[in-house]
Image (tube, rainbow, N blue to C red; front, top):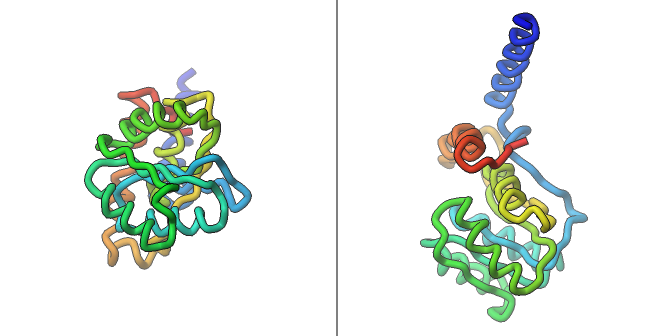
Length: 186
């Protein structure tokens, strides 16, 4: 039994080291260009690259509507979508949520009211795993696809653009969400 525990601890340490040195391989989840749905859910935060990505996906006909979720920068994200040519009639705003869990919980009633069965989640690449797993946890009967923004994806940009701190913080938030809310990151 001690040998098994030692091997498991070694494997866990190896995975932790690999995730630390190659966070983009672990944190980024992308469902690919074939993923389409009934709505795009745009999460607040980031450096305004998220609404640019959501507008791009909208114009590629990935989904006919966009739900902005998140308090604070919801008005800015709406304005950026409008500037990118997304019609106001295709945009809905949920502006009460302040965390990733609340993004999912507060968006769900709106999605259910419109009988949505599938959604494309747009966030930053380093936030993608936690977002997808949180939405799947909150709404297990729905299908969620991840199509993140790749702003500052290159390793050379992490420090220069201030992404490294936010990205590294995800390694604390993933197990934190697992322990506190039961959101399994795997």
